[in-house]
Length: 278
Image 1 (cartoon, rainbow, N blue to C red):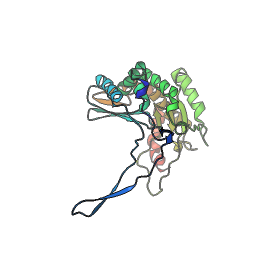
Image 2: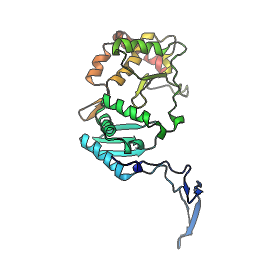
Image 3: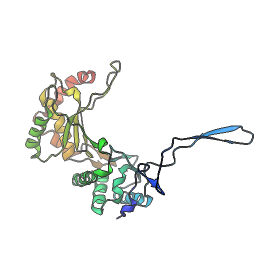
């Protein structure tokens, strides 16, 4: 395990050198003479990077991923406060962006991180989530603060979630839930697509599109969207044919167990144009 000295440090704030505080200076223009070409103006960027990454620790984590993944791996270490772990497979290459807090994580956390990133393992994602919560001091608390709103003007998501959790999951889904925020979209540019629900494994958060909080949207359809996202929490994505499957066979089979599955699917087909306009 990499020692705590390998932890990437946030640079600039409160740092000092020989007892004197470091002062951030704006980029300063400079010029020098190039023979025969007059003056060339340059703008020097701030010299201090935002984080210092221990390259040995980064390579060690990259090797772990390469051992588990059947293909090339490109790993980037970030200080992103919103997306702690993100990954995708494109052209047989695993591209992962992982927060620097994992560079000095215990071996069991690193094993879980690899299992989650490469295989989408559900139990591993829980272990990783617990580590993120325990390491909250390394994150900007203001960035991580979530405003959860479950009671809408027409539909209250919380009782819907509780009913679904008890009926289909035995109360085992411990995800957060909220209505999403209304975006700013010019009326002259109608939607081409709409994402009615989403699930973030990192935040363990289900978001439901606010356009569903309307009188003409039936409760059973809102429940179907919430149920679909709860399945994402319960059944992780898998890999097949060299690609990541967000809806593996088990997921699709469980989705059809929803009491009003056919009814909800039919309602969506009949009203998709209205959903796009709203």
